[in-house]
Image (cartoon, rainbow, N blue to C red):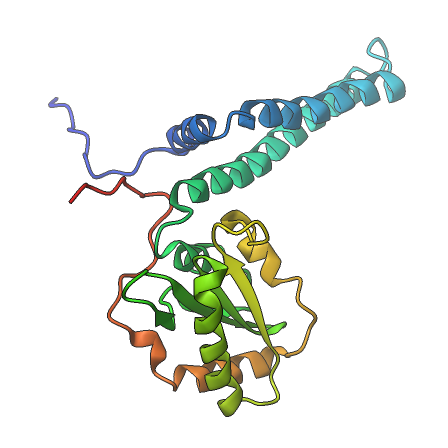
Length: 236
């Protein structure tokens, strides 16, 4: 029988994908291995300790084994959770400071209850600084991508446009850039959820639709970069 040829377009298996993610994370995060090791070992050691405390290996061998198996499974789960978070941080560290980085976060990491576009609502042709907009339970959040000294005026202009259309909805600012008080890229999604609740689910959709009618999110500029497919820019 003739051997079936492997499809070059076939996606790699889960184990191979996890190994690739682990290698990428370890390359950009020197502490990742230590965090992952602790995440796996702590539940395993806890399972072994509970096995000796509550089960006698000579009399209750099944219960003893079950405690250890539960510890191993808990260690694997903790390992995967920590790997996902450290991998996301490592991936976003590669695109931090690039135009479109905020859009990548809004596209791939935005939690439920938020509506946003990977396309900025305002951009500076000269500096590539941009303003992004998100709508959620905290109201309207305008995110400046670039130094605060350059994006502040852009944010103020956008807020005036928003307030004219929706005067009763709170407008908040966030800054993602080189400033010391800026929000790190990998923490942007979590930071959005720290604003005080101002809108309900139905109101979020209504506000988002109303803002989209401004037509500012159709600017002829590139979309946010994909942090997991980022490539170094070629010299001109």
